[in-house]
Image (cartoon, rainbow over all chains, first blue to last red; front, side, top):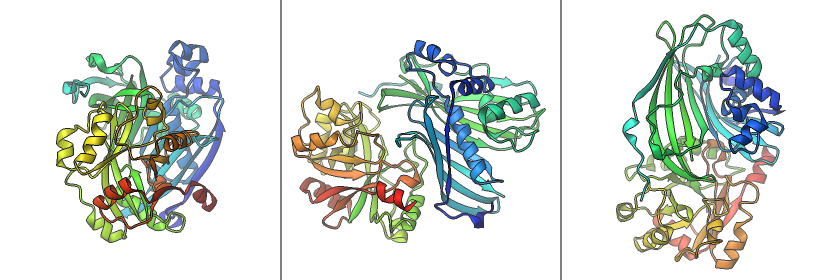
Length: 135
Length: 135
Length: 217
């Protein structure tokens, strides 16, 4: 996808999915962050949490996946995310975004995107932005 | 009166870790667990960088009044050279900022930790600003 | 005239939205978001040197500035910030006394109004359950674009009980959330003094554009 194919307002996604507890556990191991809160409900409750939670890093990986799938060939240059609430496995998630700016220079063609991870009732658990270089 | 946070730790380096060469198994395991596409088999997916946690994740000389429980509040990642299988990566971590604010969870202190990752060719691979929330 | 009274640019540590990109977005979305201007209300700070007149002229939108500060009754938006106010109140202090701040700001030529009052811990509603009401509150942010389900709804009872004026703001930290909630004024607002005066007097109401935006996209 090239910069002339994209307008400001171009929507990314949505990506709809529900993470299982096992997926979260496997991710935490692969990401070298096997903390109790990410491994099981029981371990998370020992830390005073309501149950197993999804690492913020996995939410960022999902943002990255959204961008890859929505803008084929694009290279992620910068990704920012703010974790506004606990994301839990077993709950339906909607991940989507929108292109808010595009610019070209000697360094290449870039778009800026807003990104949101929310539940089905519109509560935004993770928000972020990305700078993406287009081919 | 504003809570006096000890800002003298800002700028201090608290970890420098050289990792074993990146393996194709690690790269594949992370991509599968994160569902994030890999550019190709020999290049790690973008958020693979979050795996590069040094030997020390937090400085040892944290201000005592920061709070007990720590949560990942967000990240800002800027990418440079891609990570390739066989790369030997070095991560240097410093305290970048410390501040306080209030939110739904009450009074929160934030510690921003900056990790700069370079490869064996001294190319910058990523800069990660991690915001840790204490309460 | 419609203004978004509560916005954050990249000057706030948790926003990544450049001011100009906000304006470009509003220019593109004019049909769905008929916003005439924005008020930048950065967290816990005041930059007396910031000047957006060139951007105002370029985009034909009003850009005013205030601040969002943190008190023992929750967060408060301050409009009409001046040297007297910043000399008296340290905006980086997350424990300002609202009972002191709100009347004092009014006395010094500005206005301080509680924002997202329905939000847990940092909203007025919860504090009013256990503490006396604050003297000098004339308006509250009845519609906040960043609030979760039920939080805006909680504010109706507060407004009815105390007779507060109601306004709206997006609380945007991302470009695409600018203007989703805003305030409609009966009269023109061109300067921060106009805004301060009008917030005291009335003649405005909150507007919600979120449903409209969902239909368009």
